[in-house]
Length: 147
Image (cartoon, rainbow, N blue to C red):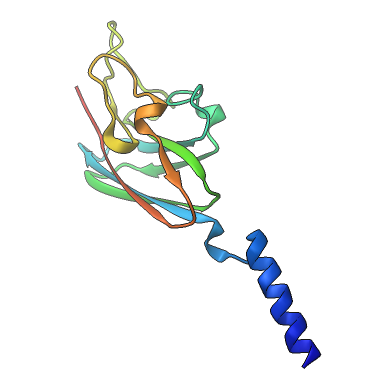
């Protein structure tokens, strides 16, 4: 009887502080759509820092690189703690690790952001691309834009 009570007490305490809650960490499923060809790779970057989003890959908290395939590709970030995030995606067709642009700064490769927040004359902003994770898995549909 004492053993059952002790286990129950530990479970209650553990749940109260979130240590035993398997859902405290979530997964983010990203469906990357509108990939125009099979050239290169798609780079997916997960950010928490608005000043790093969307282009400072070194400051992303997680990243995935997958082979590009025309149509839709899926990736998954796991064990993501609650918080506010934004995702940037680049279709790096020539695999040089950059979003190549023309002389006017207009991207020559596909790009996307969470919430499909893609302003016409500037890079996406964290405020328009951010989303919240709070213990449940999240699925995002991100369409790529090409000029």
